[in-house]
Image (cartoon, rainbow, N blue to C red; front, side):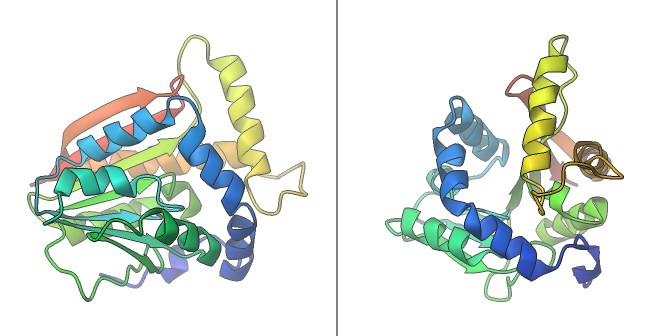
Length: 233
């Protein structure tokens, strides 16, 4: 894979790690307890079209909320690898998945994953990750190359809703994006964070559709969460 470090956002990695590390506990509660989210995570895992014995990688696994669902799909003979770059977040993921012998949580960059010890990746999942990357489509290209022919790549990301009831939903979504974008002390931006996020997610999901045969193309949670899955050919 090519070196993608230049595609990360301009925010220094240390600052981003401090930001997400500081909010790890709150993020963990939201990731596991928000109504409808567990069902969404189960659907995301199913979209990977895994079989028992497969190897699946989650880029940006966060506190590990998806990992048990992936473990369930591949069975004890399979392998689940969760990658994230934030220490406090990973510690929670390790604690949460300690009982799963087939789950491995490692620290690393989602755009340059430390996968030398694993080969033959069957599926790759990235949830709420591509919005953090400077060049999301190129990252999707590398993920597609990683799984290769017959592999599956699944993206799930939050963007503005297109449903008829979208205005109030999108107002809440915009506020959440602004509050979750470091530094949170800024109230005004030259380029609105939620619009930048929309563009990145549109581009990433479009690239995946261009590179693969669709196995999932859905929206969830009031139309805010976009789920795209593709099998490489």
